[in-house]
Length: 138
Image 1: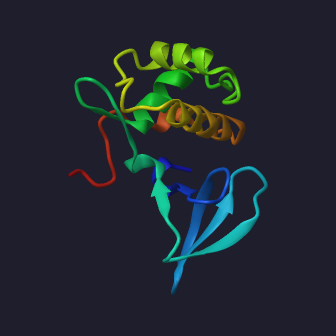
Image 2: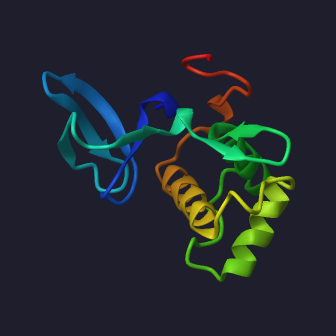
């Protein structure tokens, strides 16, 4: 399982692994309940490997944020995404100290922590994440 194959689907909770490509879209499998569902080309799909977090200097790829969280917590689950906003911001500041507080909203932080926890529960191997590597370099 690699981040290039893990997607978030707008309007659907959780994360999904791409199983195969179909004529009209994708076949994905939920990381939480292992149910497979077809996704058509009209649905908005975000590949986790292509998402980045704004900092005051640049953008940091989400995969590097995940790797930092995993190293900090020894691949264990992080705090709940339902914690207070202050706790979430404090935790995120430890992980990514220079994140842009005006452009990264609390809802973004909750989503990152929720996704990290889904991956941790699915026993994703965060050590396979290579810093600076991307499936499609721009």
